[in-house]
View 1: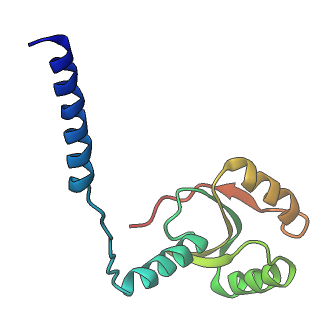
View 2: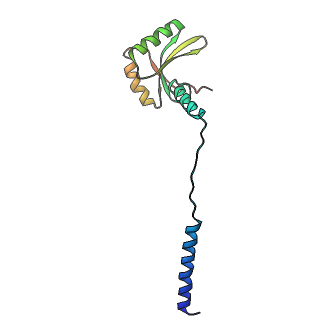
View 3: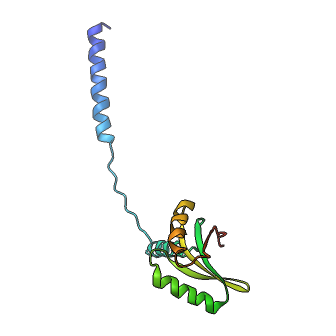
Length: 131
């Protein structure tokens, strides 16, 4: 075989490979069928995180003691601060008022400075993750 025939064979091979590659190319469409409960679960998870139910972060404790005083403290807090969510948590035999759900210690410290203007005994804590 001379070099001209080898060159022609080489060119022909390249043409065949490129043409066959285009004919074998595929196009695809993807359809995702999502259960509508996924959206509800994501919303529930977001709400639980806001209420410190799933968080590994920090919160600020405003009060620890009797239920009546805990309710008073929560009302006073909600009347003054809307920036951070607050809740009453029960730990036998006392109630705690927790405010905020902070992902970092520095974020909690900034909020604490503001909150201590009205709740001087407030302090930062890192609650254990609930099961």
